[in-house]
Length: 477
Image (cartoon, rainbow, N blue to C red; front, side, top):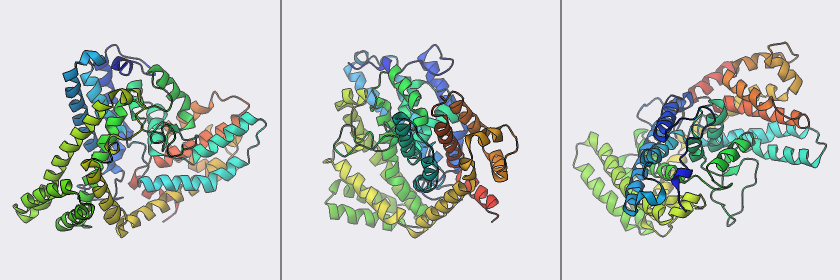
């Protein structure tokens, strides 16, 4: 039975409100006011350290995703009205349904580190090469402790922006969002400490990436139980956010590549046309021919904007209708969170899926593999890797020395005494809250784990320009 009142509740960690609409508006205000959200304006989308304000940042991308999610959510609601909202207990939840989809989209990238996904790989490689050898030294006296050690080894080498978003919301910023809003951000349902399921296994798509860390495991379990979402399952609104994100990506990077001078309008048109002809795709070819012809009727300075505006609006409208139909047709599975696919990827025989593949392939071949883009990624690698090396002494300390350090007392490692002063006080408080109730048996290993999280929190929470500046300062460059 589909009953949305079980998903949209007043529950939150502290000070729950008394009406659902007020609770939802409170979430909206908290998100828009959050420092982690504002920092997205200085985080790269594709082009790191970009000075051209017309090029997308994580913030402007998130705004576009939020608008598309709003469009999808309102369209779904309109369709469900035809069946009768009371059937799904949705008659008083339109604002909650639409706003949660919109706000989840604003939050979806807040865990992404500076310099984008390449930085995620950099962090994980550094952890494998530098943190794991430290973890190996910890002795384990029971099978339980050994299992814990193995879980933590996986966890620290599985940094992911989705999992970091949950950590930021729950602990680093302590936004005290409703459980409804928090769980809608959980895009992937596997813990970073768990193995990735093999293709064809249950929930292989929903668990293809880490969605939360060991540090938030109990918190996620509590929310899932409260909202009646089974382990490994998704919250229904998350499918909308994911679809909006996928749609927004399709033309954004191609459009920015023209602004950057990597491609021009004619090259974009010819690349898409060539791929359409190669794949025998008449659907996308017809759209771009029409929009290109209309764009060319305008003066030269406006042709580029006209083409992308018309193309984007047409494609978004049709793709939104497509994902809405899939949502409605698979309503019960999506409501239960067991629908094991992205909405846009579900029907691989559709004309829409073929069009999406063509646009994605063009971005991969002609933008992401561009020399200038890869040069920026390599610079990001050097910066993130360098910062982790600089802060490494903090995770090499004993737990006793680190405890003394936080009391502002002297220890032998004079470098650590100076490094700790640079770490955010909010992140230190999150660490202290994590370790204050640890049991004695596993204290040493868990304290080290949370300390490693602390350093990762600090560096991954930097903006592109701050990370560059910090690296230059501490490297005496």
